[in-house]
Length: 177
Image (cartoon, rainbow, N blue to C red):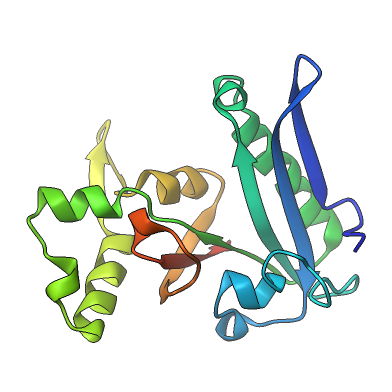
């Protein structure tokens, strides 16, 4: 499907080193339950609504070389511009929490020994956890902290949001405020 200018490719020296895809959907915050559901398993078949009221970031992928050239930040900045131009009501993305597994190890937490409700509670606590960096309180997880730098804030953790072992298959629904 044509996502109408919502697919961006970032290049370094003429080579694609990053890309970002978004779509417009007609789902509220409570209706976004997983990446698979919201994107039809990444195909965008029958999920992109050209006049949708919600702007949804499908993916952001950047190679190491692209990271060295700040392509991730450039792509996010360009997509923010397109969100504003789209005049949609809200913007969302699902984030990984890649430092969660390491945090569990550092705190000697046996995640699999917890009940499902205890896991959910722990993940939600982690998502909003902060630490001090240069005298400022910032989100603990680096991925969430990076998005926060663009005004994107976590809303809630979602079990089985998408497959990611470092995140224990949780994702975090984030909203652009």
